[in-house]
Image 1 (cartoon, rainbow, N blue to C red):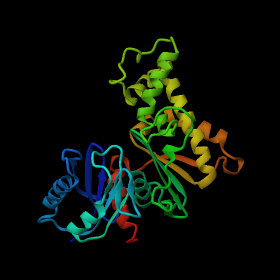
Image 2: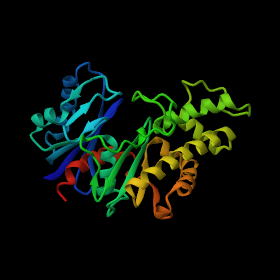
Image 3: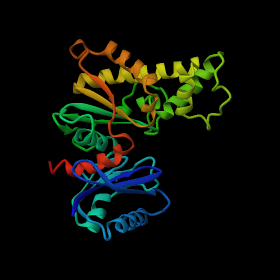
Image 4: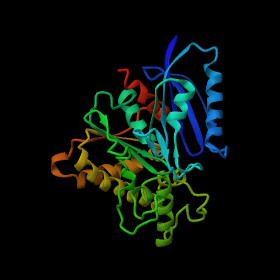
Length: 315
């Protein structure tokens, strides 16, 4: 029998899962649409049925289940009013999955899961103090201090994406204005592009693309081709991120900062201005001490991180 943990990444569009052993090897995986059911219990029943089909007649010994989800609360085992999910209130996901499978089940938000996965299976092996930043539709973060994830008293600590960087700035999905993720995210890049298109008269290959059709990958492609406006967008975005991270470093003093998510694929277009601005704004005590790295977990980071919630207790 192969001891495995099921890592579940509950996203706004799809829910991915994988069967992961203690070394981080994926033995099987799959996914279902997240929000096709009106009721949360119906969604869970579809997830159970899909997973059960893979467990039947397998050589797997199920050790536990880890879940990464938006607004996933490690302390309560509930998903609390996630903005990008149709089901509101406190969803008792850990209680319901535990009742079905009778194995240990743990939950945290997706960025915290990624941080734990990076420590067990990725580039943060052996590190006790580091930060993981997820750059996707929004900006998530997981902070590890003295070898432990930072949860805070209520389970919601570490929301770097909701540091206010521009008072009365851009409207954020959280209900406030000026949060970092409204500037540094795939959505933020899109908003910045249109702001700069309105500001400048210079020619750009992006000027005829409608707002609804524009995405961050298109801006990165234009920047790689030398489009001056697109290059300015990434310089601005990287500057915003570097300034914010300099403040986070003053509080947590990480040895390394890891990035993953779609926007991180922009590479040096983003990271060059991040490095420059970070070093420029760091307190002298921290200068030239922090490495910036892309996650080594690739596209499996979310499910590996979720599985690490369980495997972390076995090591």
